[in-house]
Length: 609
Image (cartoon, rainbow, N blue to C red; front, side):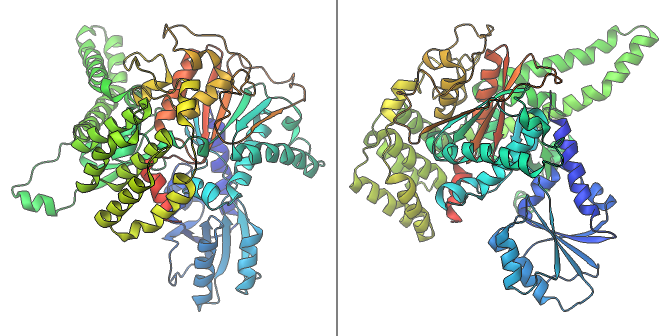
């Protein structure tokens, strides 16, 4: 089973809501929604459904001669203020205004329009986007600031929208037989799903077909495991060491796309300019590129490997492609030649893909050879292994004096606090003073937020590390047998918690034979590990669905377990979950998340608070 049906359903929902505005229309799009919208529809599709002009939603008056103005935005206070200001600034009376809210219209949005005296001047529409398919095993709400919105600002909108997305899955595949989680987000989300499931059945009592599957236990999914990001802030602070993780660290992946030099995508090497100074002054043209295993088999093979193995993999892939080119010499008959010509397009595509990923690997290799990378990784691994922060202090101070990117300093500060738990107040104050003097007082607010929400809280990492085997000394990066391979020794706490519910033997020891697949056991409420998880804040919440399975739906041989991250997930966590899927013969883990996260995007979120 893939989620192709969801892609088609989202596209159909989008075109349906656009078609409710008859005739040509100007689309005013919030920049944060450009990426998610691009994963659903092409610009040509929008034009086919009447969009003749497209503007960004930004402050200031909007000049458009189109009668229909369609605003496409999330219903945030800031966005709504910008929209109402633009409408009030417009002197033209011939415009028809439409507000498409993603994923829904809220009472607060309507109240803001009412306060502006515009409630009767606009038409409200909704685009209930839900989960967007990023890969066949990755679904995302593609929010921008989910961690800060919920865990810092206390805005529960993200949980309501998450419950809507989960319910849409249940309407398609049936109710999750078991839902389990630990932490504040799980405590709120799991009862909300149960309540809204009953509300949906009551709301559609006259159209029972739409909610029919909510009466049955899913034959596709066996469980939903809710991962509360605040229960594991260690993992997003760590330097990611998978190929995909390092791309996100150093190049940046946004809405499944990277931005690279156009020459890398065209397959033409950039020609050096006569004047070096002129080359530095002339910006190189960049283009966006979709990272997808569906369209790029080379990427599929590389994305989850530990970067230490990248040379081995690239060499093997190059030899395979070269051998397939050489096979043309063995084509003797007309049929054999025709078959080879038929494969030639695919070979050229793979060859161009190999060229791209070789170039990306060279960029990442340069980054991993830098002194900053080496220092950050060494301090990180030492802290995770149990060294006290004081022994790493001079290295952290060195990063500050060298003006290393500030997120690298802050990530080690947070890791030091969580892993050691005993940083002297005097040391912490001096480090904060050094940061402000080196990077500027614009970071004062960020440091205050970090202190309030992280640095003032107690953590019990030493005990948790021992209970859950969070640091593995003899990790095998070439042939992984444990989730710790993706961080070269550190097993993500989030995934150890998932294993406590769904792969218990892996918590206690690495799988001895990577080719052996164990039989899946029933997902439960962390049975056998409840005491080990006690140092992690939050209660264990479990909800077992009591309805029957649907006899009219074929039961899947390999059940899917949905792991939903509230507050973001890293690419290396996704890689480790794929390893877990390969270790169990009748279970496949599917990742769902509010958004993607790494240390840099985490601090950028906090900076906007």
